[in-house]
Length: 338
Image (cartoon, rainbow, N blue to C red; front, side, top):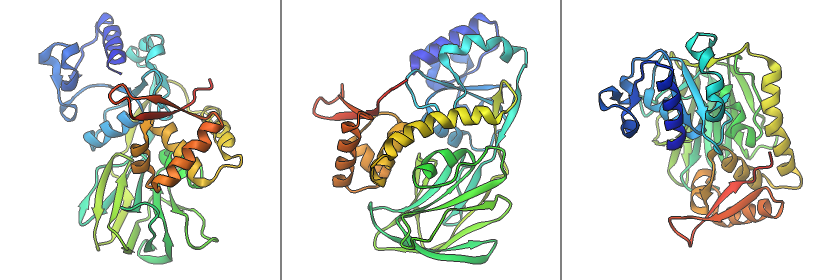
C-alpha cells in the first residue's frame, strides 16, 4: 500500500500540482507539507488503499465537504472504489482539468449513550459482545413502535452499505442515490421477519436492548462502542461524503460491479450454510485475516468459523497462507478468480 501511495505521489509531483500529504506519509514528501488528515484544506483528497482504509479515514475526517478520490491498492478489496492506482496515470488529466463531478453518498449518525458517533458511510451493527448470543430490542420509527424482536443482531445500513455486511445477511441492494436506510435483523427468532427500508428523513430508535452479555455497536466495521440501557437513535447525517466521479452515474455501471459480487456470492450460496456465506463476505470485504480475526469480525463461535473455512477451502473459494510474522498462524483470503 505504501508503494502504491508513493507511485501516486510521483505522478502528481511530475504533473506540477501543489501537494499536501498526510503526516503518516512524511517519509515520501517534504515535511513542511505534511499535516494530519483532519487539518487538510485541499481541492481533492486522494485516499490510497482498501475499503477498510477508506472507511477508517472517513471516520477520522468526520464532517468534510472535500471531494474524495479513493484509489484502490493492488490486491485489496475495492468495492467502494472506481479507480485503482494502476490506472491512475490514465485519469490524472481529467482530474486536473476538472472533467469530473461530485457524487453524494449519504451517511448516518447514531446517538449512543447520549453521544453522537462520527458520520458512517456504510452501517451500524448492534450485537452481543459474545458471538451467537441473542439480543432483544424494540424498534421505533419516528417515535412509533414498529416491532419487538429477538435476533443475533441488527444492522442499519445506508445505500452505500447495502452491498456490504447487510447483503450477506439478506439485506436489499439499494442504489446509492436512494434517500433511504435499510434495517436488517440478523437471524431473527421470528421466521417471518424481513428487512425494512425506510426514508432517511425518519428517525430510527432501538430501545429496550437486553442480552445475557454486554451489547456493542460496530461502526462501519471499524469502531466498537459499548451500548448501555439508553436507546440507540439513528438519523441521517448532516454531512454527506462527496466522491469524485469521472462519468455520469449509470445503472449499468452499478450492475456491472454488482454482477461481479453476485456471481461470486452465487458460487458460495450453492449448498453453503449462512455462516460460510458470512465468513466469505468478511474475507471478501476485509482482505486476508487470521482465524482469530475472522472470529472477532463475524462474532461466530470458533467451531463454526473453523467449519465455514473448511467448506470454503474445499470449494476453492478461500485459500490459506502462512503469516510472515508468525509461521504458526495461517492467513485466509478469497481466491482471485479474475
